[in-house]
Amino acid sequence: MGMEAGSRPQGESSMHAHAANPYLAHHFDTPQQQFESGKLAMWIFLATEVLLFSGLFCAYAVYRANHPEIFVWGHKYLDVTLGGINTVILICSSLTMAWGVRAAQLGRKRLLVTCLSLTLLGGAGFLGIKYVEYKHKWHDGLLWAGQYNPRHGDTESGHSPAEALLAGTPATQPAGAMQSAGMTPRGEGQPAGHAAGTIEPALRPFTASPAAPTVRPEAAAGQAPPTAHSESLKAERSMLPMAAVGPPGLRVSEQTGTYQLAAEQAPRQLWIFFSIYFLMTGLHALHVIGGLGAISWILVRSAQGQFGPMYYTPVDLVGLYWHLVDVIWIFLFPLLYLIH
Amino acid sequence: MAEHDPAHNAGTVTLAAAPPAGHVVPARVLLAVWTLLIVLTAATVWVTHFDLGRLNLWIALGIATVKAAFVLLYFMHLRYDHPLNAMWFIFALFFVALFLGGTLTDTEQYQAQLIPGYAPAMTEQSATRQ
Image (cartoon, rainbow over all chains, first blue to last red; front, side, top):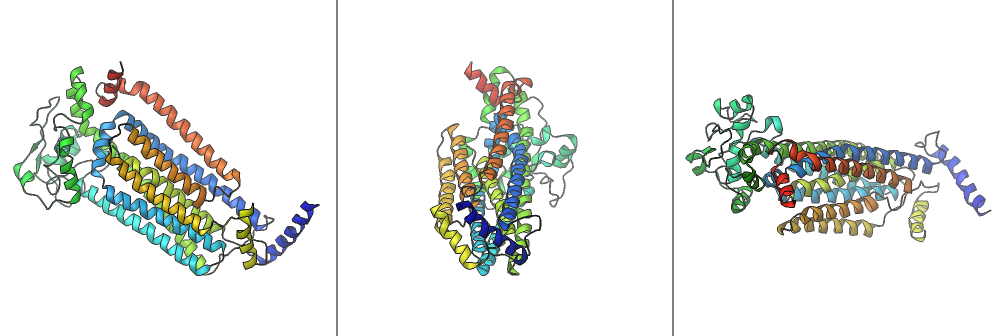
């Protein structure tokens, strides 16, 4: 009896809604049913997104388990401040997105438009900072495997033993990369190019003499004003082993006789960190771009007054997507920037 | 159920027709979750100043998981939603755990020994264990 009393008005109102609500597709009985179907589909999509990213997280886990020293070393090239600011920006944009969904549910159009605009701003800010970070790495040649070709001479080179070890990289690079690194110096403008003549890549197969990566005096002496990043690297200098010794993990294998081979391999393996870094943050950045597109779309629609308590499904679903992008970054930030 | 009523009432007051499902998250809940997320972000950066060995990684992952849980439960409404939505997500996480767990078990068994000098830190670990 109670059920009947409860369900009859609902049935009536849904018939009204069919007539009154232009957004209710005819194959749904009620706006509620339509909303929940759409939401379930969105969650299924988000589940596939999690699985997509899990492939990269798996690659990260395998390489970090095998080469912890590479990750400890590599993360020093990432700026924790910029990464932290980006984390805060994404969290704030998640808040404005959730607030926007709330505004749509309550039928407050102006608040919805404001919230969506702020979310867009946050996403754009995130991409802007990401661009600064990428540009810096591009400039320094700290790129993925095939393009990994660290460049020295203007900011950090010659200071950090890590940099000195990185300088040895050309010796283990394929022939083509070797040429670009030192044999045939490229111009300044070349993204993956090497600063002409600042580093002499010494061929040092299976030797680990301290003199292996030769840094020319002028490279060490003539310095641009130190950035915060180079300051932090300098501060870490005492923690880093000598270039010829390699990362902490390499030292022990000296006893087993595999030291020299390992020392020669270490720079090559440092590609791995940057490959994983660019794959993970790059795929994430693509998702941010996609999210910005989707938010722009619902921003236009909400400015036209298309959303309200009766119909806000697109706002809610785009919001879910945007929050998932935030959640993924919440894991990427400590895993890439905060390695200890 | 009682806490759902005000929101639904607000919806019905604004609109004569039946409002679709959807819980309106109170503003103070959104703000509280946001504050917590910011505090936890600061905490995860702060904790890296201490060398806790392997524990650092687990603390970072733990904090990230708590943050993600709050985003999922409140910003993404999972706490108020039909459980089916959460089930889909948990299924995905379950398969991610299988995927990661299986792969890591395998790589930790063999990878370090396959190529001499390939994973020096891991050979070091297994040497100290024995």
